[in-house]
Image (cartoon, rainbow, N blue to C red):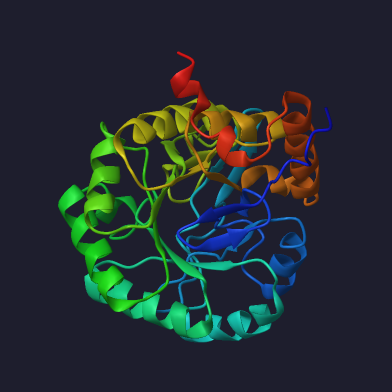
Length: 306
């Protein structure tokens, strides 16, 4: 029997992607040039989170790398939505869908930003309701289900492109946030963002980061991300995009089996900018070896095999 070539293409809320691999917000996505390079082997690209006004972020040190991952507290540095329009112009030649990541402190700001991203040509918007280290933004807004629902609902009424919601894992019950996003009309949720963490410099007797507590990413949060996706899949009807700790093609398969329809990859690209090509090849070979003919056959399979 001759097997068909595995079909890596996936579709989420109308977004057609050649594979389920998405560049996560915050890594190699400040400038159009790097996003275009990553897009050669990615199914889609998420921009850096952009707000209303330009922000310089926190003073150094803002990143601390160690054996088990990366701790960061950048403070949401970005050029502001008006200046970012120049980068979006350069991305019009990109073959992969561009997803505009935005952050705001209330409904009004999210609506304004979403409209701008749609006008710039973004194929979807991702609401950053999960950054763990920026006062007044991110998880400070996104850990309240009532606020999540109202913000999502307002953005859905304001734009025609799909709306994705990036959830924080820094709560007791991430499912309640996922359900709030779904009730607000979200087209998909992204789980997870970084996990709040702290390291101490014992010589200077203070946090290694200028902001104190930061967000932990890298291989160490893989089990947390998988658990969140697994729990969300049991409760939600909308698609889930997995994120957190992915560095190998095996990790991608794990997320698909936990219930993710696609995955976002970030921290691992700091060491290997060519990682997407390797992930794509690994996932394809696995599917060939197992006889799968589409990514959909793998999604949530772990729920059926418990």
